[in-house]
Image (cartoon, rainbow, N blue to C red; front, side, top):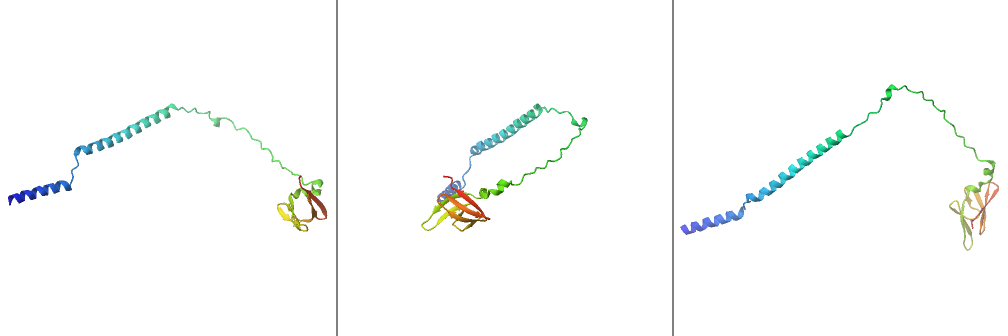
Length: 156
């Protein structure tokens, strides 16, 4: 029976050793040393930066400008505002309403002709910006604006 007890004790010991591995004390020491070196480096760098900042603050000298409150205040004269008058349209400008119309192009289909005036496609007898299209030819467009005949030509 003693042989059996001894065998049981040995198996218990081997099971106990395999289930809880022991961490060697020498393995934890390098991590602690690394952490302490890192903390010491942070404190040292903070100390160096504080010294450098203090040194630059004392090295900068500020020149004080002369106090302007002792000088008398000069009187400031204001200039009256200038009104700008823009002239109205002259008689010559009123006679040329052609500037209000821009002919961009003329094109023809089999049965009809079209023009692009003021970015609008128009045919004969259509209205564009208050003027009626009278005729469309290969190079010109004639508009009737309040009894005045306006001829627009292509730039070619």
